[in-house]
Length: 188
Image (cartoon, rainbow, N blue to C red; front, side, top):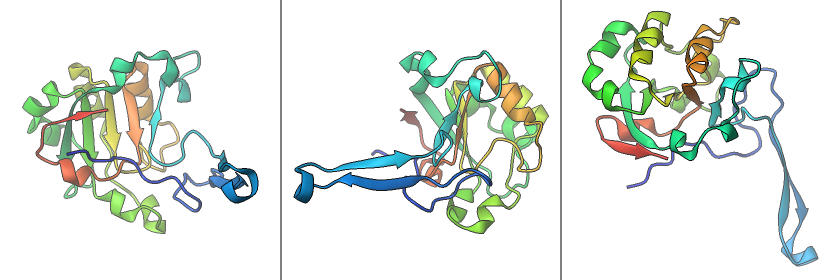
C-alpha cells in the first residue's frame, strides 16, 4: 500500500498568511504547439513541504545538501486529535515507537481544515519540553498536518530553532496521516 502524504498543488490552496498564492498558467498546448507546458510560480513553502535549516538559521544547509538517506526511513504517526498541545507525557507514553522511528509524524486532524479559513485556528503544537525530549532519539524529521511546528502567534519560532539547529527537518502541511496511525511504514 502506498499513501501519498502531500496536498495537490493547484491555484487557490492554503498558504501562510502574506505568502503569494501559487500561479499555474499554460504556456503551450498540444493542439497549438505540438506539446503541452505550464508555467509554475510559487514559494518554497507552498503546499506540503520540508523546512531545511537554512529556512531559519543563516549559513546552514539547504535540502539539496543532505544525502538522499536523510529522506528515507521508518515512520510512526501519533494521534494527537484529542489534545490542544503535544506534551512530554503524551510522547513518553509512546517512547518505544518513537525511539525506533526516523520520521515522527503528528496527526492532529488539521488536514481536514485544508483550504478553509479554520486551517489557521490554533492547532496542537509541541511544547518546548517535548521537542527537547524528542531530540534524544535523533529523528531525521518531524512532520505535521498543520502549517507549522510553532504556533501562528509565536514569531520567535522556538521549535523551528530547536529542531533545525540539530538538523532535524520539519515536514509541514502533510495529508492522509490518519491512514497510517498504528501502522509500521517506510517514508520516502
